[in-house]
Length: 211
Image 1 (cartoon, rainbow, N blue to C red):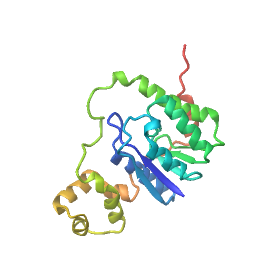
Image 2: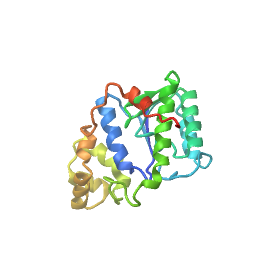
Image 3: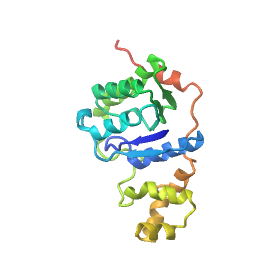
Image 4: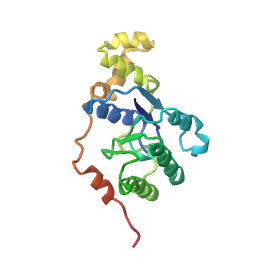
């Protein structure tokens, strides 16, 4: 079974940007997604407050999990280590789309540590970030809640008029949304950058040791 987990974060990427690359990755790797979990509730809550997430993962043991980046699991290092430990203990195969790597219980310890250290470095540099919307991200839209349905309709080759009637929304506004979000490209998997051949080595080499 293949599942996806998406958690928007105001300091990182919105749900749309994550879905774009996850969908492209799934198509390019001939993976059929059986279930999507878009988590609009967690935000930056600690893991013990995210029971809807932990219960979901516990019910999906042994699945293939597609996730955009490490921070999606958690931006708290203690919680992240616990998430990694429990996912691997429960025999998940976790595909990190941004890094183009897959981890499982059989993965190299250095690869897992490399992923964790990448996030540590990102959080350490947070104070240098410019306050405001991340570069390249798009503002929220009333259509965001319909994104899964819209992508499905596009795959089914429904017209914008048919989609608008099904969703009971304005055709012109929906058309603008589809074009601005490049949802046709999302639906057919044409947005994924080429993965490097030595992706695992690159992740390991990002580890920074103290002087």
